[in-house]
Length: 215
Image (cartoon, rainbow, N blue to C red):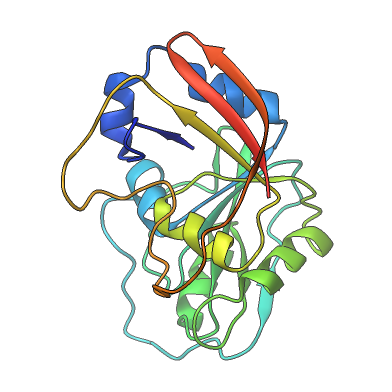
């Protein structure tokens, strides 16, 4: 993640304060060919503006998956209820792969299949992230995955204990606006203890500081 000094991650804001191409330099150095993003981030950067709609809301109702193509790299999107609509089935040579829960309409998965888009449906009420990651590894061969936001999906992975490393970049600027997402956000348990990290790498890229932590 790249954030302002106050930890906010709004993309338009970070683009204003990032000096150059530091974020993608760091992402390349991490050697994670596949990336995962939450619904809001996928909507912002990849999905079509209009949402997916259907008259048949019958849920898929069971854990299932579809392998449209085997790829060395995937662009993985979390779309719990099947609301995103797609115009392409790959981005930047990464095959698109969508993860939903089992309450998502079957018609949504049928549409993905028609478009040549891979998908996983797991979790009876909300996505089972542990099973989704197991499916990514065992079915699609994903061995190393970068979780690249937004704040709520980062928080969900943190809460589920699924992060091995935090790669965090601080760009030279301050946001300060109220109610803007932080790099980790949305955890409902107010009594959850803070997560301790072990700092093992610090690097300066222009005026941006790149820190890497182990959990």
